[in-house]
Structure formats: C-alpha cells, structure tokens
Length: 127
Image (cartoon, rainbow, N blue to C red; front, side, top):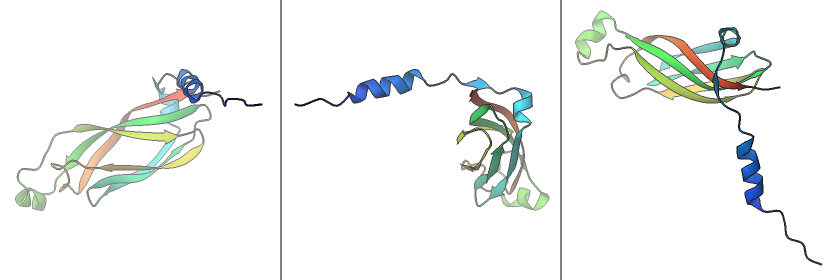
C-alpha cells in the first residue's frame, strides 16, 4: 500500500489564512514596553521588553532628531538636522525580551546622538 503525503500547499495556505491583521497598539499597550537603546558605531540598538499579555509586537516607528554639539558642526557642516521617522521590524511575542538594531542612513552615520521617541507600535492581539 502506498499513501501520498499531504500536499505542502495546503499547509502554507492554511498558515497564510491564520495571519492576523496588524493594528496600531493602544497607548496602554505601548506603556508596557520597556526600551533601553542608544546610538553607537552608526547603529541604533538596544533591548526591548514586551510586558503585554495579549499583544504581539511586530514593528516600531521611531522619530529621531539629530543632536549636534558645536564641535561637530564645524567638522560636518552638511550633517542632517531634520527629524526622521524610521521603521524597525520585530518579532516580539507577549511577555518576552528582544533586541533592537537598525543601521543609520549615510547622512546620519556621523551623528553621535539623537533625541528619539517611539511614535507608533504595530502588532496584533493574541488570545
């Protein structure tokens, strides 16, 4: 007797159908995130803890404004001064800790510090 294994297509179609719709997380859920991050060697990096029981985090939108001291201004007169928004993709289940890492763009790589804040968090609710 021979039997054919289940088709892989069925498995993939099933998992695609179960993909949740992404939502912008509410303010209360965002307050449950603990982020310890900073800048160095042209990278924004650190750790993030998702203290939520019912939200899976998939994306952060971060606003970053360069901070220039007087010495840097003479060294790099063409440095950017504009606030920019950056997207950081994550896979952070509820009540877990993960890593953040994002390379800075070429025009920001010489900036040593930024004022930054998370302005939007995307994810989905889990049961």
